[in-house]
Image (tube, rainbow, N blue to C red; front, top):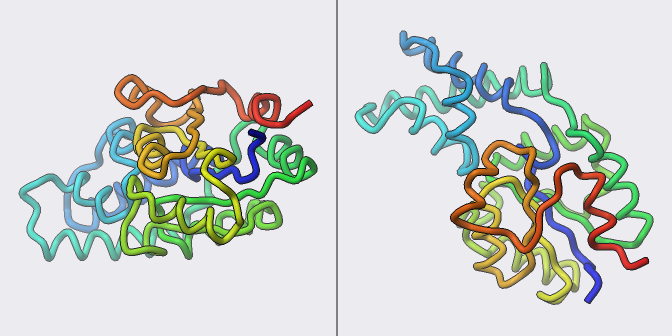
Length: 217
């Protein structure tokens, strides 16, 4: 069945935001008098939302008050600097344009806070492509819980067989599996190594390849 609804993760899938995230995490650590972490370490912590990112960045023994302080600092800093270095991945705009022309309904489902996510989408001039943008605080549960996909399917009138989740990590694939929809993994993102444990139905090496896979010709 042709894809009617394509749901995209944000970080590592549509946008290369890793450097701005690393800078914000290290700014929050510096505010607590802690040394900087390697950027690659921060990148490996991304995917489960800002609260979990900060908990991982501070370590399991960090006091709860420090975690709350660091999270507040991180969010404020990141809002001011979230597009300092962040760009769209190769082929993203062209692929979204092609899907829009083909009549595919599109949405964003990320564990990033929704207000920040919507602002990034809008400021990168992608707002007109998506029916909805939902973040980690849009629902009671974050990915990999299926509530986000289930809600989007209901709102967009798409059945399971015609819905596709596109993401860069095992969290996205688990979300698709939990919602019983198809899953596409992008190999260029933050955590493609997690596909070994949670394999997608298919992968694309650039977003240019996605329309060729899901649009009937």
